[in-house]
Amino acid sequence: MPLLIGLAAQCMHFMEEFVTRFQDRFPTLLGLRAWSLNFFVVFNLIWLSIWILSAIGMRRGYRLALFPVWFFAIGAIANGIAHPMLAVVGQGYFPGLITSPVVGVLGVLLWLRLQALTTYSA
Image (cartoon, rainbow, N blue to C red; front, top):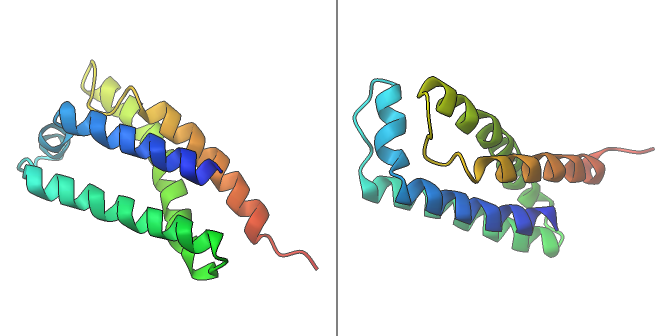
């Protein structure tokens, strides 16, 4: 269940980033050119599709589906930490800040659930 709720939160997070132009602000912090809107949208939709397909795979018992789900959990935790830090660096609101704590907490819950699913017990 944390995976499906996490995916819904990630969709909201992506929407917040899209509306507040994350694709312009983040790369410039790294000294890079802004990402094109098409790149940003396609990149996010591909990952969301992979994670949704992984959720379906997990429901069907495919262990290979665990790999992208682990990646999602790690990314969600990183989002929950990075966006507040970016707001501090930027000295104010940074795109994605509002939804990032929710995504981060759900990432931790998913991480814990995945640990319980994948821990070997003799």
